[in-house]
Image 1 (cartoon, rainbow, N blue to C red):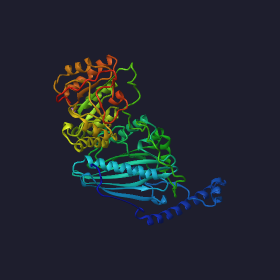
Image 2: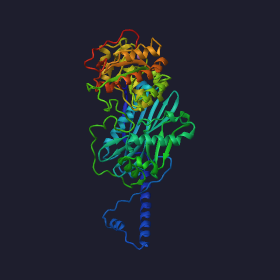
Image 3: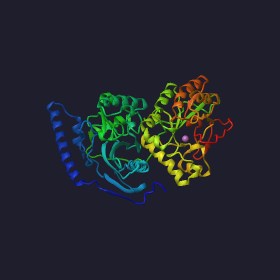
Image 4: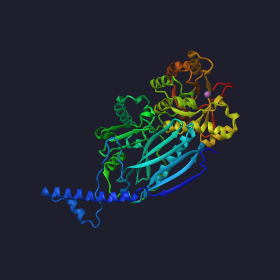
Length: 531
Ligand code: NI
């Protein structure tokens, strides 16, 4: 069984140096008291009574007053854990697929159990994805810092170190927790919505443009790339990118600071609270009431930088609708970006059935496909005839591509297409287990055989019916050449070009789909090496 750790151990221990930190906290509290005294003195010298300090002195057990956070301008605020009584570090060590050593640490804070549980889930999945896809993967470790603890907000920054044959890279992600709702948020939820994330993305690109080594064209407003956002002690927004993500790994971590004046209009109400928490030191952070974990996550696509593949902007089940799903297999290819330009020009959506090698070769194209609202789907790592493989090998072929794509986009694919359209009961069983529906096709353009753009476009357009699924391959230049003509002619005929999930609505894992119209007779995929 893949991904089964063969040895696992978990422990909770006080963060090392806790005693030291407590002493530091005592010192800090003393200096905070001194600052307060100074403040009171200043107020008195003005000759006015200060009702706030009068109230505080009347209170039976005054808790230390908050002070301003300090730290580096180009870093997220770091909270001294001595300010969070009862914080414990949770560490687990595991042996993953291929003997990869994983050591995962994260903080457990009193009455914030759902946060620690979510951080455990996230770090475990990321460790497994790394072990599943990286050739020569050796080890994976996660360390952490607290980036905010105040009001009803906690922020935790995770630092991931990956070691493989290429060396060592460090990645970063920051998660935010609402102590009242029990919900853990992605970094992009500090921003009010997708439009605000896009604005922020433009500000960041402008700041990174002149650094030379950064390829801003590979940066897109998606949650997987914008996964470590927070605030510096002044309240400016800081975003950081993993080593090797948008610049060569040897250039190290890439980060940008956007001044608070520019970023404040873009913040969500939760983002405003997180900002306040990051600029303030709460001497003794405590949560009054423990929240339970929310039952459901946010609806698909509601988190800025994530997208619903079955977006509700078009209803393909409406009998008057004319939906058609264009699908492109075996890519991405070198000319897929041109194809994406053409789709964007016609406001058309498509589905890309991705294979392993091309995803590794063109990760930035995969991110762009996702960022522009197209659907990503699984077409196996090596493109084998799945009916000739055992269950474990079929699962491995599919899971590796799922993990590769999730590492680039954060998206977990739920559609697959068996190479050559070759499927049987065994493939159905495995895909059902993996939560993926099998998508075949109703129109075969045979573009892999006939490298003739005119012919490909005629076949796609002349056979089109509402509900059709059209098979093409974006690795052939003649197909890329055919697409603008196909889009123009289908638009003229009143078709809406949609993703497969928009066409079919909810799909059943393991089930085989040939087209999206209940009244259309099912065409069987042509035999031969078509796909
Ligand atoms: Ni194929």
